[in-house]
Length: 408
Ligand SMILES: Cc1ncc(COP(=O)(O)O)c(C=O)c1O
Picture (tube, rainbow, N blue to C red):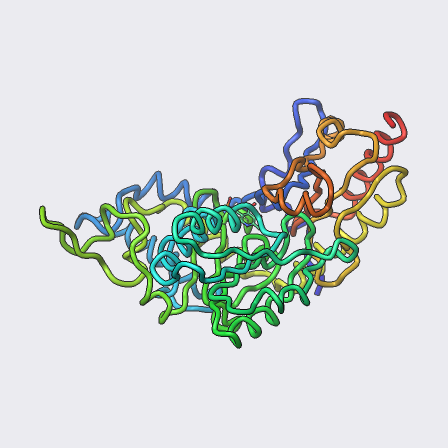
């Protein structure tokens, strides 16, 4: 059954916004952050209006309600990702989740000379922590290149890089190219050589029902705000035997068992990694978002978004001067279409698109090594999600054609 996109749109108050220039908003910046349905906004408002309190700290009614809501959100979210609450650590987003692997696992378990394999396609969140750890511990970071014809990972180079690897860190779906990597093959091959695997699912989770236990990755990093949830929260999913070998990353309140002037002992499990006041409103909002997303078959969501991206790229490539990066015709490609015009600067193009009401992202997308591989400093990126329509794509292409005809 196809998605009822018009009904879905009614759940998002912002989608009926008219911009100051009089144009209705057409939101194509979903890979940066998705919009939030009313149920998420309401759940967070209700927390602040009815039971705002700190969690895990006091015995009064409000504190009990806040604690219960925080933990009930953990139950829902972990279950949505096919795993147990004990395997989920709340973080501020995918960035903090990856840093937690670097500083809470790799720092304790890797030695000088150990190999970490990453790819040229990673977001900076999955590059810089490894570069910094390399400076601190002397681990070797190997980069798997991309094939710039097919825009896919060079899997032969991956096989070579895997030799001696202790950790493989790969983006599930590229935020620039929209291409999904062969993560199942990567996990199997990595485990065959005894390496742990971290998947960056920041872009995968909005387009696919991620099941942590079935996928068998050792770590999965996720951001809530790209999948209808609020900003400021995400999680790291971790296998139990791997979590047992992690040590503290951030220290302070909440994560301790006992503090004396001689030193401190720590909580076990996910509590060791959740330091300070929890992100209570954000967790409640994310819980509401996964409830909302559970109404849909993610295969249909992927098909809808893929069809929009494929249609957009086909129409855009008919416009003189437009070059597309990625291959939106691939069935595993999701909602991001990166493009450039050969004579209109990407910033100028974004401003001209904005004048028509179209919100697209411009820049290096926190993926400068990928930009270097593509030989460009930046791209424009239109990225689609569950509430976007073919009519929006048609009007976008029409406006893009108008700009290109007029200004090139
Ligand atoms: C592939 C990928 N990884 C990681 C991140 C970082 O996510 P956050 O900024 O929510 O921590 C992003 C955000 O754009 C992303 O697209």
